[in-house]
Amino acid sequence: MDPYYWWGWGHGFGWMGLFPLVFIAACLFFMFWMFSRKGGRGASESAREILDRRYAKGEIDKRQYEEMKHALEA
Image (cartoon, rainbow, N blue to C red; front, side, top):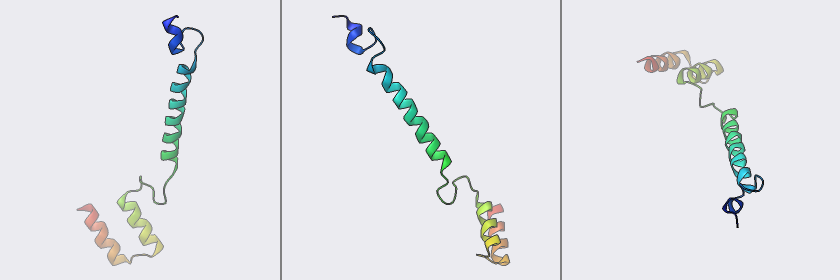
């Protein structure tokens, strides 16, 4: 028997050609899923942006905002 036939490369592309395509598609799907979701507070959001948002929402007062801003800059 022809050894190329055993691996699926000799007579047509066979199943061996399907697995890399499925693997690449799964990787692309996973990357798209990871980068498209923000998970509530996005991982790309900096500490300063979080502080500004909290101050804008009224969660912290001006004194706390200034103290935290100064701590971030130090």
